[in-house]
Amino acid sequence: MKRLIQRTRRRSAAALLTVAAIAFNVSVLAAQNVPDAPAAAVPPGGDLRPGFVGRWIDFYRADWKGAATSGPAAPRRGVPSPLNSPPFPSADWSYGGSPTIGESDGNVYPLQTAINGATGRTKVYGWIEPTANVSTSRDRNYPETNDIYSNRVELGQAVLYVERLPDSVQRDHIDWGFHITGFFGTDYRSTTNKGYFSQQLLDKNRQYGFDPVLEYVDVYFPHVAHGMNVRAGRYISIPGIEAQLTPNNYMFSHSLLYAVDPFTDTGILATIQLNDRWTVQAGLSASHDVAPWTPDAKPAFTGCVSYTTTSVKDNFYVCANGINDGKYAFNNLQMYDATWYHKFGSTWHMAAEIYSMSQRDVPSVTGTLVPEKGTNGAHCRPRVQTCFAPEWAAVHYLNKQLSAHDFVSLRTDFLNDKKGQRTGYATRYSEETLMLSHWVGTTVQIRPEIRFDHAWDRRSYDNGTRANQFTAATDLIFHF
Image (cartoon, rainbow, N blue to C red):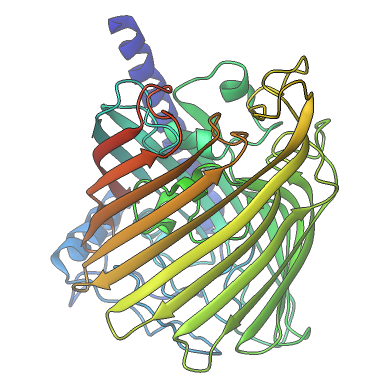
């Protein structure tokens, strides 16, 4: 056991050193960008000190004291943002697969400020997320995610971003952007895409892993309607409230709905802003969670529509995601998803999502056909080799802002895995989670939570030994 812990620590340390080395190397590129970003956060009444370390220290000192100053507000066209971020993960009713069209990149980051004073459009930044949980389960909390391992202190995510966002505020010229991600931690289980270093999970079932989660280019065309962004590469599967990258979520742990849905796609996606209220999306991918060069890849269509009311108090986002023949392959899920955001007042809002997913011709757990590694068979009727495997899920968040640094959230979640193809157990699940989020400045976030899970039809927690599960958990996100 001691040797296993030592190996895990060595791997964690090696990965963090790798992240640091990458950040140093890309700093040369970032330092050569044309200066056009907003002014960096600096102590009041003075400039950042010279030197990499001095600028980095000054950023955190000013941020944590609440004494940071910034340049003018980032330019924007279209409707105003409905929320405050922080404390919430996003200020807008967001959609996947594209930067928010009409919103400029006004973000300033500690590492980029240390590199070149945050002058330039290519930005280098990221975060480190240690996590801890205690649970009534002894081995695994699954299908609870991201704290899948019970009673542990872990490194959930160590992430490095290098990105340039296209300027979609202007309507004069074509612009471009790109994004590259380095991702290490236990949460690689929720990003693994067959064909991208997937042997770490599918063959070796490692606790920690590395995944290049996002690699894509964006091209913005200003004269198509009110603006069109075309994204090509690997990106997060676009529907839904939750996402793989932890700062983009209300809570530390994920809903059951999220735990079994598609993670990342590789393909091309067009996002067109028709006007301030309507946005449409259409694209083709290699299906869910598979690289185009794998045998499981097959063309799949994605189409979405987003509508925001004139008051900006409501947003509706519906998607047909990864649609093709629906025949069983690695996560070849046929997904139909709908999301509704509603703002009650200045401090209250809710977010709700429901989906239906399915695959056909899924191998039966009692048949002679063997499911692919990393997938489950279906609980079909006796003496049937394959069957149709559907599931549906719904989640609701109720969120209350307490201050500029704090909010609370209550999540109610339900999953009906009818044939057990997603979780391994054919049962209905529910969970309730209560969380408090607290920010220190804009660079440190702490999210303690308590959660209760229940499997209604059979014991499905702790490797099938428990019907109920209680967890208390927290994470800390340190942005750099």
